[in-house]
Length: 603
Image 1: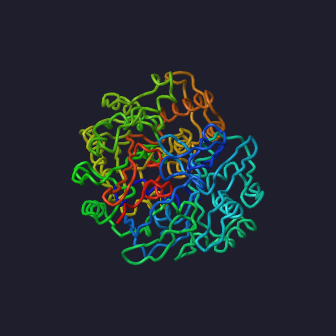
Image 2: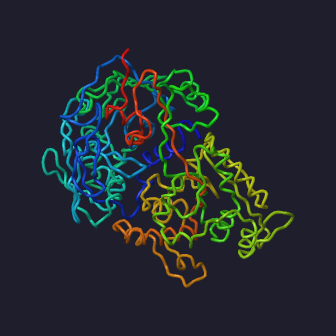
Image 3: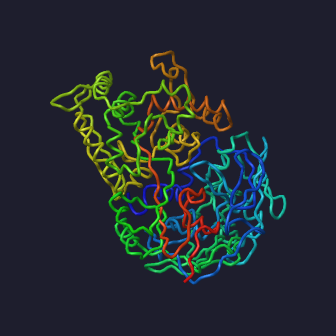
């Protein structure tokens, strides 16, 4: 993978094309209560509670100040710092640096779907409304206190701009109760995880003085021309580090003393050095030129060369490589052709080729993440045995192609009119593991008689999302969230499914485990909307039904799942291992300082 891995590119693309790439689709939000005390919450059970920490962690009254140093934490960026700008709706927004400069509304542990406070210290959700409580003590870097009015403003701007939370909250139903309380009216009941995940991507990064004109335009005309084109060269942030300067080779920020967690941060500066390739980042870490890297694909031979003081923290990505089919194509709009492709590819070999340390094959192509620990099986329950595992079987693949009207001529599959079945597999240029994995895919298909080629593209994103010029392409099949609603919605009903995959809006589906049984018509939008509001056994049952649709109709072919890799040096820094739940909140270099769990050693 490229400069900082596939996850970053996808998330950045989602940020800059937010209206086009919504992650939740037509139904999305939840209900839960959060807590103060530390940056934790026991929100998943819907009850307010406190959760204390050890050592120099905790919030407010129980926080412990650490001895200050003059150290600078040095990491990397793959974007030229002087070209960055700080409008989150525009291009060239900084990749990870924003996580230090701005504060998220909430945070989440992706391994457990446990939600933690950010700007919001608690949330209380009823059937028809949500009450959000703003944590006292936050300030804009300009010195102004953060209030409920700022949160309300951001939420309204996000909803107008197409964010997921707008699927169940209308902008006129966002109301300020007092200086630290916002109340949202819900258009429909939703599950806890769905609501909280809809808040997760939102940071307090749009000061009203800079963006009021755009909210006014949305409220007056329904559109805000110029929002994406607005350029901010210096940010007015809300995070624990304040912008100092951006030059050709570095971005520098300094500790912001008025951040409520500043007493737990004992280093003066953050610096991002411009290192535009994986190779340069690996070298910088190996030579101690940086103190850590937030998320970068690192093959086994490279990681084994690192010194003992370099600590790896692995984080669940909850997504991985899949095949994106253009359903308007004469061949790949056919269910049996897609199933044949899934049968031909050796997913075990693919994961090993791409990097066995970081990837595992998808066991059951059903649209559910959780292949590293098998957690997806808990959702499928007793229905698991009825799903098609698509174990590599070229005989079954050949049978399916013949049933679809294909035949083999001179060792190559052709359709009824003699047209060759081609597989021009487009992937982003520079994604190291996907290049290796793509070669494995192409080899399998060519050996089977499908004319396959691997096509890394510098213009990949514009080709796919702009011009929609592709036949088959590699992209993440899951949505990066463990809760199954999100990946199922992405595959069956989300913006990508509708506008890029051109997948039908409904399908006729037989009973689970009975592919030749009597079918029922599944309307994706209606059933995903239903799933968003279900909990317990009802949610499990509906998840199984929709996972079965993915298993049979393959809007994408799920191939493998990955982990993210983050790195921190320990010669000059105290930090935790990946066993600490805070270590796997995106990303250790940015979240751990807020908890007092990444601190500088005495100089």
